[in-house]
Amino acid sequence: MSKHILIADDNEAIVDILKSYVAKEGFIPVIAYDGEEALAMFYRYSPVLLLLDVMMPKKDGFEICREIRQSSNVPIIMVTAKSEDADRIMGLDIGADDYIVKPFSPAEVMARIRAVLRRIDLPEDDRKNDGRKNIVTFTGLEINLSDYTVQINGKPINLTKKELEIFWLLASNPGKVYSRENLLSSIWGYEYFGDARTVDTHIKRLRAKIDRLGASSWEIKTIWGVGYKFEVKHV
Image (cartoon, rainbow, N blue to C red; front, side, top):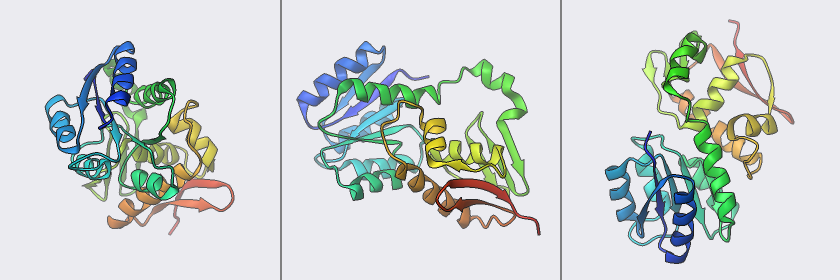
């Protein structure tokens, strides 16, 4: 696995702080000070994670996130001075995994990085040994957690890591209701600092992708006031 973490921010002071913390964790920081440079560094180094500022020259963080999501599910943590819900939700809607508002604690940033990377850092031997238990199948559906692929009606569907993990967890336990808090702790980990609306945003985006492929024998159902469950339809 790559040891590079891309830090994209036009504030040199913030970059210096984050670069130091990232290096202390054993990663190799890759730096970009504008959007075009960030994309160039991403394609050159294939980093394991991006810390992506929203407000940057040439291309903003939203543009970069959209472009990267066309070809990659690499974890992206948005970093911004904006605290409005609309900006946070936009970042999540276009595929960001997390969202941090300035000013922030560098230790908090590293805690979020560790939480994200733990979920993708399963050793290859463990993936092989898990075998079929990492594959969930229903009529017209296959979710493979080992290689992070999903097929619906024989067609591949491009999901972010968080979308796929939510989908796999729900489908692995059909009929079981998960509260938003359950999903936050299971998918994001106990170190996640966000709120339950993050789950709603990811579920909304996941459903939109599923609906485009015409799934009909199962669904992700909302249990109002509680959370979500995977339900197999009996027709």
